[in-house]
Length: 289
Ligand code: ARG
Image (cartoon, rainbow, N blue to C red):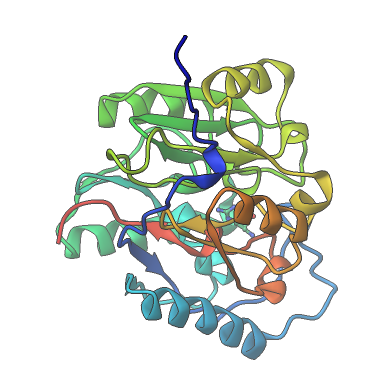
């Protein structure tokens, strides 16, 4: 007889990986139109407060050793602060966005210019897609959301551009209209210390087929409650150890601690008025520079 000792996932040591992010100071932030259920143009917004909350996120990333690049905010584009929609970047290649709604379409050329000026090989898309809002890299695989913004055809296109497997997931709840509002990749880098990439997600945001795929591929995933999902708990960034989340997502915070991650609480309540949170304000720059 031999004894097998299986280390519980909870005890795994987490490793922080330095990240490079693209952000945009919300100088022109407001809610003047509505393209998702969170946006109510009649409700007042406070731009100074948005800038202040955003600044805390920016400062925290830098204090923890991450690099943050900035793109200039364009007047007339209040949603530009949500840079996750500005592209999807792997190995120095930037797949540019093509926004679903006319209100944001003018942002795309600004992101394309930024990528080109900063040395990224830039692919201008044919299909409607909203960048890292709907595409998340989990290990070698691209998880891709559709149902509200990015099209199914963009999933095929992003697969061709990066030569990677794409797993299409259908979003069904209009409050969670981008994949990054319903699913978070906790391990941005894979190596011998991290094991396979794990994720957290909100089961109710997906259809049955997509849920079955997620259960099969990510048996150790953290399943987040509706309560935590509804405060955009999943709209979070992770460096493999620190997970930047909303302070309102109490249950998710405890789940992360149990698994050995370090939740870092950042309140972006003002930016939630536009239907975005921490991840929406953060575009990962992988490779180049
Ligand atoms: N108001 C923006 C929109 O509806 C919010 C974008 C949020 N971004 C994200 N990555 N989920 O397009």
